[in-house]
Length: 62
Image 1: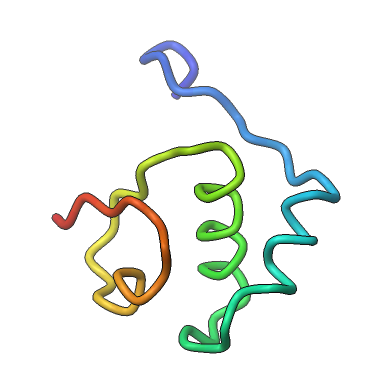
Image 2: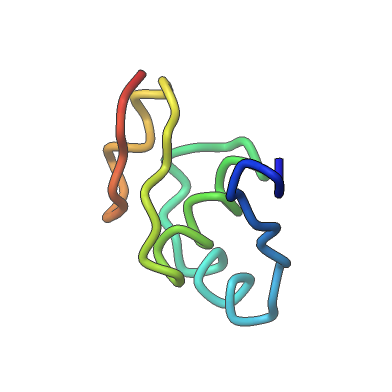
């Protein structure tokens, strides 16, 4: 993936801080961490899960 311009995004403590403040709309812990990271890093999530739109995060639906 790195050859195509994608970079790894480590999980930092401040991602966990944001995660703990998220409302429990989505119960999948992995998806909730993706949401927290996207909020913290001002990223766009590319995913087809409609529950993501209930959070203050940018989503590109596929």
